Amino acid sequence: MKQTIGVLAVQGAFEEHIKALKKLDTDCIEIRKPSDLTNHSLDGLVLPGGESTVIGKLLRELELFEPIKKMIIEGLPVLGTCAGLILLASKITEDETIHFGTMNMVARRNAYGRQLGSFVTEAEFDACGKTPMVFIRAPYIESVGVDVEILARVDNHIVAARQNNMVVTSFHPELTADLTVHQYFLRLVQQKAKTCVA
Ligand code: GLN
Image (tube, rainbow, N blue to C red):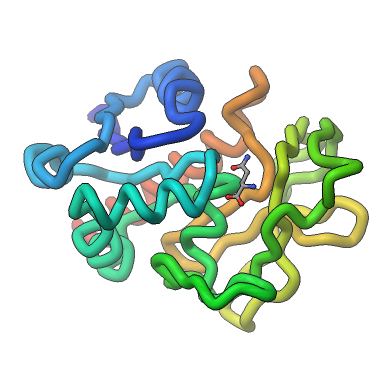
């Protein structure tokens, strides 16, 4: 059966995620209002890159914040990229803001400064081999809790990690033709679905 993945579509790079997920034969639902969450049986959710402050504000205004937080806590597989990573972080460096705060990690926003605002590189992603990584005013993860698995590092900084049902990347996997990260996420979605059935 096809997997149904919700993609938060209030701001940022959501269309590119949909294109990548469709290449992997999934059904995608754009999430813009609470009924988009309830009218479909979602197997997973993507929180795209964009501007975390803006996305956080829109989530609250559109009354998506609480239902999404509840779904994540209840175990819905979620992929947070760039701003999506910031939304999931339990702590943001030098910032009192916490959005969902469900993932045990400290994220630093705009961690690469202005000089190196955007760049492309390649690094190992989990056991999946070298993966192209596009960084745009990206955060990185300064530290993680014991329950968090590190999936990728660039220049000694953590740029991808997983905690149970949550996968995050500080780069934009949807902006290259490489589907490694989306494939990794869909394998997690499949595993979680099996666990629920069992
Ligand atoms: N700099 C953005 C933020 O702080 C994230 C950038 C991105 O998602 N490409 O939210």
